[in-house]
Image (tube, rainbow, N blue to C red):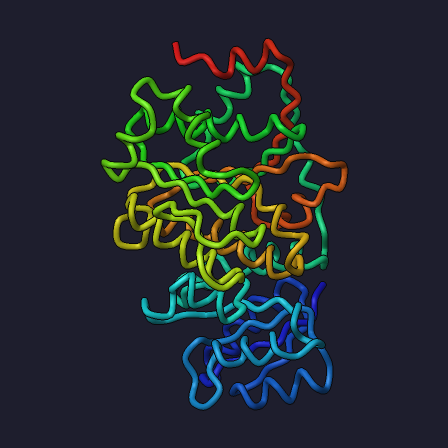
Length: 342
């Protein structure tokens, strides 16, 4: 079990959270404000921090920023307890360094599951995802179409092939009238549109013009070629905050936002491209933020693609919050079946 630091200026809330965690076998340390929390971190590092968002002095966001600024606590997981709608902004949370957030009203029901997921992702109590393997395109297509809305799925497959799963997943949704968003990190937007054009009888242009599809292209950004000229290409300073902001804006375009709640489909291809440029903890935090928006954006179903290189990096980055891990081992015939639009 884990050692968890609880930070809240209301004693009643601290005791409620402590009772839930202690009942699950965790060791609990309490702090009444941000200053006391920082002092507690200096004395002994916990496995996890659970903090209120709104507190006098050093609030939850300031505490997260100060933790990320210190090498000793930069990777220490942090869950934010929120009471106000204004405190549930995924971009603000990501920029501050928050790993997960829970509304106080929901805490009694979901706290233990969310703590377990964050601890698993940070290496405390790791689990095996146990990927399901598919070598038949029709079977894989059926599995993807029957996913519960709001699912987060890791799909692994051979380099050069797994991206096709994502393109066809998005195309199928668009044909069914669902909004779609693609975060393309491995290839440029022109390649993505070419692949989608082959799967959509009327091409991608109409869907983009009618605000049903957005392609966020960041390959040039990652390679140092800022500003690819695309409407949603990532430009400016090379940091994950820029990427998160652009992804959020693209989601708003297609209604995948806290106000639009349009649901639909998203594909991240392939977030593992970020891992060579940024610390794994930061990349994992970004992916977790994307996954956590699934429900509040209207149950968006998201595929996280990993072009397999034998390192199982995707499992390390997504472990703890994906609902399903799929290993796509499709033959040429399998791909043909998967690509059928009949």
